[in-house]
Image (cartoon, rainbow, N blue to C red; front, side, top):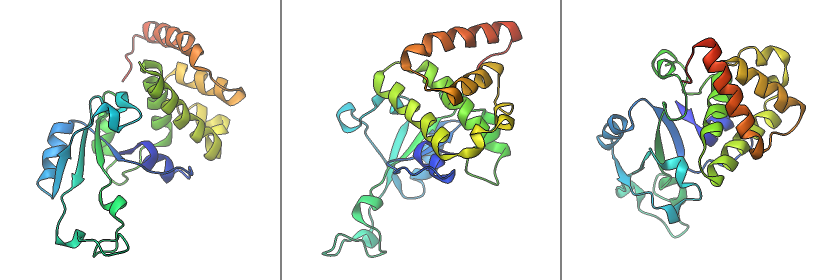
Length: 203
């Protein structure tokens, strides 16, 4: 399942795709499959990325270079790809860490794009769980992009499709005004109350 900027672009958000992020059940198993098909793992050092928390449980890979990747003087490979695109990494992210329902990874095979309401619910929970400022800021940016570029999310009918009541309350509040990082404690408490009252767990 595509994630991050790739998923946002599928819904019309004007953003640049850096790593191609993919949600999977088990990154280790998915990585082995990619490695059998011409990819190899790369290290993710903190100095190499702006948001280390994003990659904490991820595996990053790039396609192994081949003869087709020989560059010309203009910096393009023989198959027409630029060097930067040829070297773009794939980041395998564990769905559980992102609060995305594992079942949708297998039942939604017709589309690699996550259902919009599930993506918003998952991003909300991951934002509430974020530990570092870069992660808090990046996930808040994702949510603001959805609000700004995907008009259907501003319709009252969309709110009712979100996973839990606190997701719906959060999105209603976000429609009416910005959500500040300092308000996370309030929404975390509201989530805890909702979970306890409904005897349900965060995915």
